[in-house]
Length: 143
Image 1 (cartoon, rainbow, N blue to C red):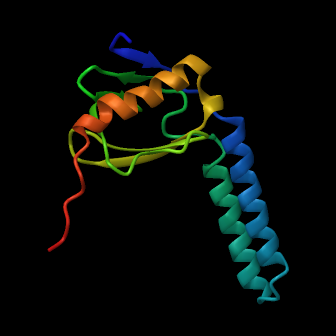
Image 2: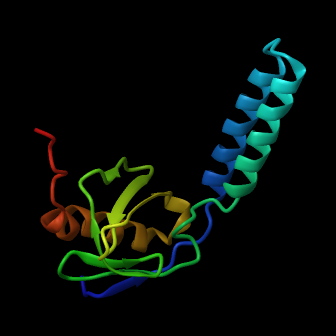
């Protein structure tokens, strides 16, 4: 595989559907809870706001290019020289991606297979396993 490899995730219909379903389940739980009306109205407003912000289905990476480099670093969501963190998990049906930029700020995103063409999905998973894992540093332990 040749690096750098640029892939462009797009918004995921699967992630949007899951976000909508989770918000619907939470809303129905509040609606039928028997709590005071003002509390239920506040919870439903908060869920609506959460749904509004979660509507993109893949933020912060959807719509941005991911550039995977030979040295295990990447450009993710417009941030240069990002290091994938040890909490990154490849479930096969989704990748939970944790990364830190050069300034140490941490980010996380869930990537679903429908966000990428099949070849790019496979390349991303291979890069995570073989390149990014080599530079990922375990989190510091308190002690």
